[in-house]
Structures are given as structure tokens and as C-alpha cells.
Length: 277
Image (tube, rainbow, N blue to C red; front, side):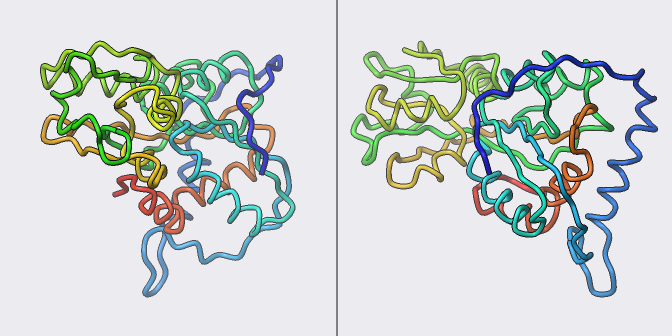
């Protein structure tokens, strides 16, 4: 697996897009194969034999999915040795703009439906986006919580250095929703381009606290501590996946999407702290 920060731009020449209902048939078929059950089976079984897939798959994935996608890539490449997966991670809004600008990619995994809509509205999605997980915010602080941050209201304390994600990315948009709903006015010392950058500020001791996803706090282990939000932090964000209309390796990309939506993929997501139905 190769991991990159950006995907090079390429020119696009595409035939007129078919009606959405027709384009959705391929994804509906894939989802049906993933979700179908046999005698004694359960939704999400991946019991069919592996196909002889080949091709290089490029996945644009929200920064908060980095570890999860890496685990799925390892499983996918082991099952399909004729494939290679390159993952480009970053803020969902930046990744969406890369797609719109013509970046060659096969799959887009966004941390919000609003960001996915940017790509979908540009007629660059093959079929319909699929919601595969949800996430919620948590306050990340230094180990031992030396500043005594006990709840969301504490983020408004004078002298407390707080990092937030920029509002154009999903973690920032969700933070703004949660803070506004709770009536908490926070003046951040920095607005970061993605959730990983915000968490890094805490890990390096550059800020006292940051509003990040609960999954990122879990992934950081002992490097940070997490302060769960109460009822005021119940807002969540939907993670959506979509095959891209100009996918260079559509068959292999569809197989990777199948893995993400399968029982195995859902377990990997759940183990990372994502909410899966």
C-alpha cells in the first residue's frame, strides 16, 4: 500500500452521464452481493470465492479513516495479489476538490454527506453514495488532563489554548454545530486543515485541548486522554463512500468497496470506535 497526501491532476473527457437510476444499478448489485445471505448466513458475509482481480486502486480517504483503511488495504491486497492500493488521506473538503479538479481516483471516502455532495453534484459519482459509519466528537487533552478540562464548557475558559478543525472540513463543521447547540463560545488559537492535524497539536503540547473525533482519541492510545461529551455532544457525522465515475480500475475499486461494507469491514470500523448499524 502506498500512502500519499495529494493526487495529481489529470484532464477529463467523459461521455454524457447516464441517468442516476441506471448508474446506480452496478452499486446496487455490489451491495446486494455483500448483504445477501445463504442458509444460516448473516448480512455482510463475504463467502463467495475471490475473483482474479488486477489493477491499481486509488482511494481518497478522510484523515480520520487512515488507520482503518490501512487495515482493510492489507486484507484486500492479501486476498487479491494482483492489485495494489494507494491511499491519499486528508481533509474531506480538500479531497473533494481534488476530484472535482480532475484527480484520477477510484473511491472517495468522506467524513460527511455534505462534502460528498460536492463530488456528487458535479456528476462525478458512479451510482449513489453509501453511508457506512458514523462518528462523534470528543475532547482530546494531554495525558492526565493537567488543565482539568471536564466538559465542553471548559473549552471557553480564559487562557485555555484550544485547537479546532477549520469549518469547511467535517470535523470543524461538526464542532461548530456542537458548540453552537451548547451555547459555548470558543476562540481557538488555531484552525487545522483536518482532524489529524488538530490532534497532533495536543500530542505536541502546542494546545491544551482539541475537539476531534472519538476514533482519533482511541487511535492515539496513551499519547492523549479523551474527555467524552455529554448530551450536548450527541451530534454525529455520516461517513459516505462512493465509486467515482472515471475510476481507472472500476472492478477492483468495487471489490474494495464490497470489503468496506462487508461484515469484516464493519468489524474493523467498530473496533476503531466508529458507529456502524
